[in-house]
Amino acid sequence: MRITALNPPFLPHYSRGQRSPAVTRSGTLYFPIWLSYAVGALEQAGHTVQFLDSPAMDLNWEQTEQRIREFSPELIVVETSTPSIISDIQTADLLTETGAVVFVVGTHPSALPEETVLLGGKFHGAVLGEYEKPILAVAAAVEAGGALKGIPGTAIRTESGTEVTPADGYLQDLDSLPFVSSVYAAHLPVERYNNPNALHPQVMIIGGRGCPNQCSFCVFPQTLTGRRYRSRSVENVVAEMKWVQENMPEVQAIFFEDDTISADMQRLRHLSSEIVRAGVTISWTCNMRATADFETLRQCHAAGLRSVCVGFESGCNEILAAMRKGLETDQMVEFMNSARKASVLVHGCFLFGIPGETRDTARRTLDFALSLNPDTAQFYPLMVYPGTDAYTDVQKAGLLVTSSWRDWLKEDGTHACVVRTPDMTPDELVEFCNYARRKFYLRPGYILKKAWHSLFDAGERHRTLLAFRTFRKYIFRRKK
Image 1 (tube, rainbow, N blue to C red):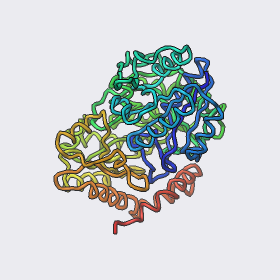
Image 2: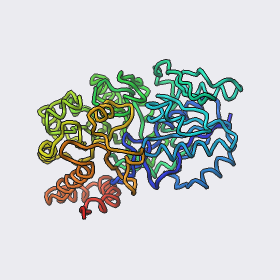
Image 3: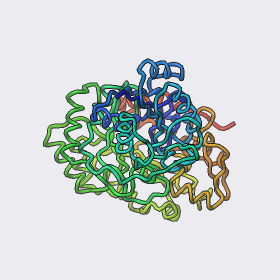
Image 4: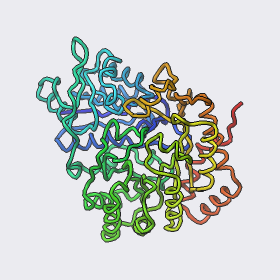
């Protein structure tokens, strides 16, 4: 059967696939990674798939529609996100005019299935949670001309409203999925995607799904993948890394998009030793919790780990407790020292606006970030999404300030803020993040360090300049 998988047009360079979808200040553009895994599963099942990523391919609505009509699919799968959901649903409704069955997928319909279906009036339904199992069942039903109602993990439009059938569990055998990198190679303009924390060009893969930690704001474990960590075998992961190295020579790095690759520290050390044993030399980057010890970091670095993205989030233990981080600042200091000793670069993430945040705690977090002095840093207002504990927390506290899903973004597509604190408005939280960014990046010592590093490292020079081209218009901008 012919199937179109669509990351639909919205704003230019809109990065829909990341945890907080937006047009980013750093030029980040995520692969549509969850949709890509679904494409691989559909092709493995024998379907012919057209895969369109309109933001990455610079396709507007007219161009996107033309390509889909020329392909003439029987089923269309439309990726969504919270800030773009109104536009995404309009797209899904319009695509029913092609005669295809149309389903939407993503974190937003997973959290609000009935509301999402009722936002539109024509498209057929939504897939809830992880895409592969439900979308394969939907495809089989469409191909056989069978009923769509009752498929586990779906919300189906009916004459009287919406019929929701809960998912029947998560995919357990992750090794059964095709390498997502092979999907990228076959369908997508790999050079267009970029996460500045890794060398460019890069591919994003997932070695494990789900996260056992309880952070209130993290959207994927609470809407798509669950709180239990499920992993691919180390051998399967290393085989994909080797495949990338041998079949995509232009790719300079692999980014592990696991919520935290260090959820199983023993497995991480095993992965490092197998990478070395298999002769894989490609650079890699990952998301990591600030609990990894020096020996683990040392082994990872010896296996090609270049940098890690770490959610430090706050410099105040009371705020860390409020977000259910399960870490304290002394552990973060120890991690930072270990990473520096192991020669692993650190991208530190810091957020502002958790209930209980004050101007004083925000300033303490900025001071903490400056004292940690990671290689790069990200400062962002709390972004709450339906389905997360943080969304529920701010709702209950009366701190959610919004009238539309579009309020999650500014006019230019960069992150806005829809929460307030007792003494900071949403605009003040955003402006404090801008101030923190300037304080961190415009230090003379920091600028000299980055310039020196870039002078002797061509990969680092390319990565830094690529990010700076977009970042510069934000870093020097001051609020009028």
